Length: 124
Image 1: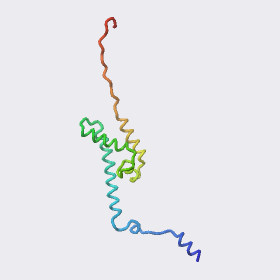
Image 2 (image 1 turned 135 degrees about the vertical axis):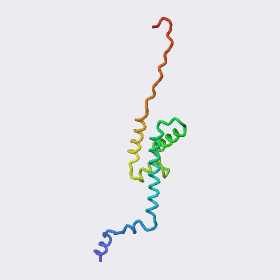
Image 3 (image 1 turned 180 degrees about the horizontal axis):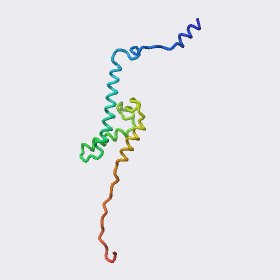
Image 4 (image 1 turned 45 degrees about the horizontal axis):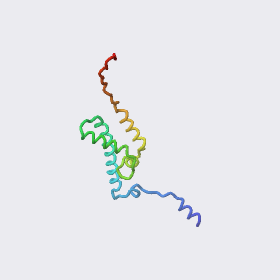
């Protein structure tokens, strides 16, 4: 009797996919949420690329919002960069470093203007 009990405890549970996921459409809802998260991440990457050199205020705003979202390491908001990466199976720190390296690498150094000062008497 003890062996029978032990065998039942140690026996692996076998589920059909329909038993595990159910038939209520939960997996379809999760797929929709996953697509939304992918769309948010894709939009941020596209904004970083498209509006990087924007001169108008709308373009600069899109760029700065996307950059701020990627840089934010918080997890309080469901759709934060870190949470979306985690839920999609990406390493948020690695992806963040790649995106920020790309942004920092594309920044062109600011060239200062050379001003000519009037020569003082006796200097040549």
